[in-house]
Image (cartoon, rainbow, N blue to C red; front, side, top):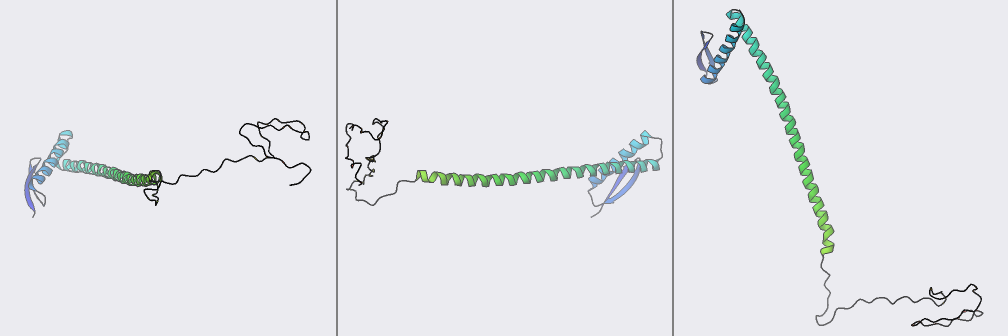
Length: 176
């Protein structure tokens, strides 16, 4: 529904017909009247020239406002893009934290596993581990604590350390 509003611009009444509210139309009429008064008070021009200069000034304001709005839209788009990128990075970091937590859990699990249960009767003691016997030196090898002689062909005294057993060696001229 079109609204009819009468506005005063520089002492002249104009009837404006528009879809906007009456209050809005009054604001528009007041704005144009104020801008015309600025032109008429600043320059010695007639009403027609003042109307043209006012239209030029308002068009200038419009273009500057549009440029500013476009810059703001670009800035907002940049902020939205940055926010989206940050949100994707946060999601990626959360996935990485989850992956690392799972890896940590897997690494800690073997250390936390209880000993496997053995099938044994409660009255029987658990078997004890058997350790292998200590290695015995071969009879032909020299002991580190035995004295060494310069000449290997000369007879060597047989020495026996406490708690050691000497084994007979076959004669040198016989083969075993």
